[in-house]
Each structure stands twice: as structure tokens, then as C-alpha cells.
Amino acid sequence: MAIQKIKQSVYSIGAKHWDRRLFDELIPLPDGTSYNSYLVEGSDKTALIDTVDPETLDILFENLENHGVLKIDYIIVNHAEQDHSGGIPTVLSKYPESKVVTNEKCKSMLIDLLKIPDEKFMVIKDEETLSLGDKTLQFLLTPWVHWPETMVTYLQDDRILFSCDFLGSHYVSSELFVTDEAKVYNSAKRYYAEIMMPFRKMIIKHLDKLESINIDMIAPSHGQIYDNPEMILDAYKDWTSDNVKNEVVIPYISMHGSTKKMVEYLVSALIKRGIKVKPFNLTVTDIGELAIELVDAATIVIGSPTVLTGPHPAVASAAFLANMIKPKARFATVIGSYGWAGKLVERIAGMIGNLKVELLPPVMVKGFPKENDFRALDELADAILEKHKSLDI
Ligand code: FEO
Image 1 (cartoon, rainbow, N blue to C red):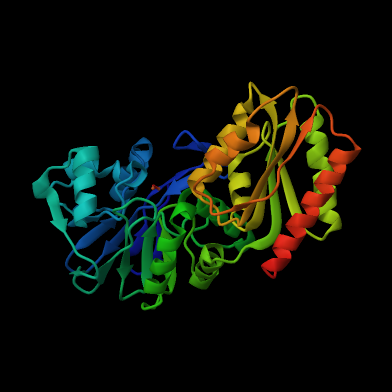
Image 2 (cartoon, rainbow, N blue to C red; image 1 turned 120 degrees about the vertical axis):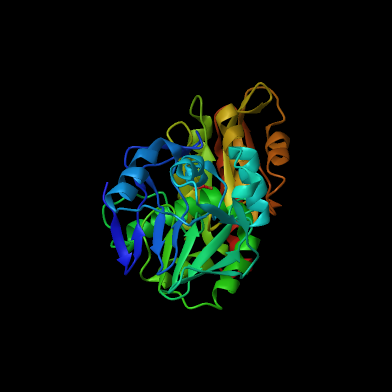
């Protein structure tokens, strides 16, 4: 696979994984992904910034060979997760003189995960620099994007920020730089929602820290390079802000049509009130699409029939996911149906304890919804409208 030149003596040398469709055995990848590894050739030293997923190591080595790389002085490790670090042991065996440059926390994780010997490491601290001769790297610790050891590397001379997962996207293209901003925005938002959103507050601090450096390009380890860095930095500022939007997300399941009828009615009632709404039938939902919509929504309405006194398992799974990724929604409630009895509302409420939401009155219906149930859904739509108005959205 091709080596792509970013600037003089700076290359993208990693792997594109065009047909990967699942990450962490959980996250759908509709657009594949890439594991970007970067080569920086200074006048004295050569650095490789992050490696690739072990499954694509052949591509990295083919690129290194084709580029005639005989010596790697430093392997810079921004993140210990194996899709970037998994290639390090093999790189070390082929380039035994290399030092693994990273922070103390990442070192300890690499020893645990990959059994890299202690003597191979060069440990750096926050804001420390490393000279390659005519080029200088600076390391900025940015913990919790999305593991505790994460950092970014700044090539001072060329003003390129190598951000690893942070600001990246699962998107693969033959084009090195972002060309279709709308497409990449959506992929990056999906990536933020699935991976980064639980660490929103930390990210706000990191974005502040990045304000202090001049950045011409952001080169993440997944997806294309941003040669207009403001595009992704502004998007992150918006997603991480405390502002929610006049939007309702409705993940739901319906077994015999009662909950579906309620969802359809509520969707219409919200549209009539000028509220943007998106229902997700969980039997056919790409969870990444659901996660994207959870980034901005002010309200989450969970719809479920009662199954053995609790929610349908697919609804429980979606509630568990929402609880994990911690969207900034302000309001939540439950609608659904039951046959004879149940504790569906209490069970779902107990599953979303991480969300800082005010619980609105639920609407639970015995059997198929009737006139008074539709009135209750109208009242719920009114309550949502009033709550959103109270936020000025
Ligand atoms: Fe792309 Fe957290 O690894």
C-alpha cells in the first residue's frame, strides 16, 4: 500500500483496512478504518509515530522497506491500545536499536499488554521535547482520550499534531487529506460518540491546552489528515459543550405493535411541536447511528414492551450502551406497554444512573394504546416542549 508524503521528510506509512466492519467486537465500521503510522525523518534521527494493528503489519513493513528505512531511532507511542501499539514488538525485532518513547503510564501498560522489556523504553514527561536534528517533537499528555495513558505528539517545525485516537474517525480513503468535510464530520461525530463522549469534561481541558500551540494540520491515527484543523476542533468544541439541542431520540422495540403505535404517535406529536425527533427501531439499528444522535439530543425517550416484568433485552442493551457513553441529555422517560404487570420503568431508570437527566412522567399502556393513552402521549410531548423551552433551545 502506498506511502503518502505529508510534508518534506514526513510521511504517512501505515495501513488502510478497507473491509473491516467491526471494532472491539462492538462498534460497526460502515466506512472501514485505517491505522495511521507516521514516519518523521530528522537530519539526525528517525521517528516512527505509532504502529498499526497486528493484522496489517505486513503493510507497514512493506512501506518501510519500499521507503528504504534502515534505522528507526524512536518509536513514539501515543496510546497503548493494540490497534496502534500491537505492532511494536515486531518493529523492535526488525529495528532492535529503536527506543520506545512514551509516558510513564503508557510504559506500564505496554509492559502489561505486550511484554515489552523495561530497557527498551525512554520515558518522557508532559511538554518534554525530543530532537531529531532539524526537527523537534513535543509530547503533550492528554489522558482519557480514551484511555488513561493517552498523549499527543506535536511536530513543532511543521506544526503537525499527531493526535492518535483523539479527533480521529473510522474512515478510510485513498486521499490523504480530508476532501469531503461533511462525510468526515459525520464519521468523526460517530467516533466521538462511541469512543470519546464519556470523557467530555477531560476533552474540554485538552482542547484548551491545544489553543496554546499553532496547528497547521492534525494527523490522527484513524481516518484522514485535517489540513483545515479548525473544522474538527470547532466540531469537538460544539459536541463537548454543555449545550443540548431541541432534539428527542427514541430507541425502541415493539413485539406486537403496541409500543410501535405509541412511538409513531409521539413522533408526530413532537414534530407538530417543532421538535426534531429520531426513532430507532433497535431490531435494525446501527448503534453508531444511535450514538451520533445521542451527542446533541436534549431528551431521550426509551420505548419497550414488558418482557418477563422488565424491558426487552435489546432495549436493556441500548440503555446500557447509553449509560456507558454518557450523553449530555437533560431529560429522559420511558414509554411502552405491558400485558398484566411489571417493573419496566423502574428497571430502565436503574440502568441509566450515569445520565444526569430529569426523569419525565412515563407513559405505560396496558395492551394496545387507547384514546386516553394518546392523550397522555400528547401531554408528554407538551412536557418535553416546555422543558426544552426552559433551556432556551
Ligand atoms: Fe485506535 Fe484506542 O485505539
